[in-house]
Image (cartoon, rainbow, N blue to C red):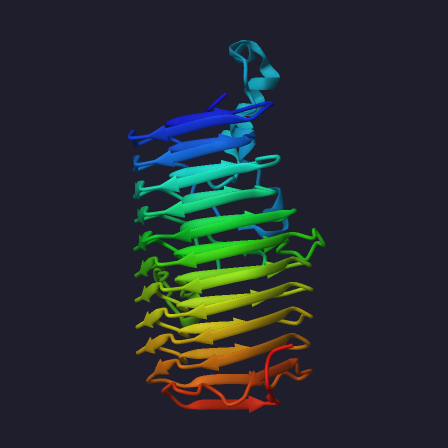
Length: 384
C-alpha cells in the first residue's frame, strides 16, 4: 500500500502499457511517482513534480545493492490496516533510513521494461530527482527533463554514499541500456548531476553489463560546500560513473554535453575491482568546474578503462583539464586528441605499486594545452 506518494503503481504479473502524463504532483511525503515490480512499456511525460518531502539520509555502501524501494508498496490490501504485523511493517518502512522524497523512482523491474521519462519538471525534491534501481534487461530513455534543487545528505567517508543527485541509476545484475539525452537540464542539486553505479560498491561479483549514452545535456552548478568546507568535503561532479565488482560497461558514450560550474569534477569515471569500462568522451564543453575537467581512475584494483577522449573544450577548471590515474594495479589506455584547454593534462602512474597507463602517441594532436607525466607512462599506436 503506498505511503505518501503522489502516484504509486505496482504490478504482480504480466506486462503493462502505462502512461503518466500532464500531472501536477506537489508536496507529497515520500515520492512524487513510485513504480515498482513492473514490466512492459511505461512513459512518464510532461509532469510537474515539486517539493516532495521524505527522509534525508545517506546510504551505507554495504547495503547499497539491497536498497529496495518496493518495500514502500508491500502492503497491498485494505484489510492489512487491521493486521498488526502489516502495520508494524509499514511503521518500519516509514522509520527506516531508506532515503526518500525523490521526484520519480522506478525500481525492481524483473524483466523487459521499456521506460521513457520525458519532459518533466522536477524541482526542490529530496534525495534524487530521478532514481532508478534494479532494472535488469531493461531499456531506459531519459530526455528533455528539468531537474533542479534536489536536497540531500552528505558524508565524507568510504563506507557511505551521499544523496542529493539529479539522476541516480543503480544497476547490479544482468544488462541495462540507459540513454540520458536531448537537453536534460540538471542544475543546482545538492550532489552530483548524474550518477550511474554499475556492479556492487563493495566488490561483489554480480556480472552486470551496461551500455550507457549521456548526450546533449546541460549540467551546471551541481554540488554544495559543507559547513566545514575543506577541499575533501566538496562534492558535485557533473557526471559520475562508478563501476565495481566485475561489471563490463561495453559502451559509455559521453558526448555533446555542457558541463559547467560544478563543485567537483566535470566528468569522473572510475573502474574498481575487476570492472571494465570502454568509453568515448567527445565534443563536450567542460568549463569552470572546481576540480578536474575529466578524471579517469582506479583505486587499489585490477579495474580497466579504455578511453577515447577527443574534441572537448576544457577551460578554466580548478584542477587539471584531464587526469588519468590507474592507481595501484589498475589499467588505463587513453587516446587523447584534438582537445583544447588552458590547464594541464596530467598522466599519472606513480603509486607505490604502479598500475598500467598507456597513451596513444602522439598525445593530443591538433589540440591545445600542456601534457604533464608522473611515473611510468607508456606509448602505444592504439589501445588494445
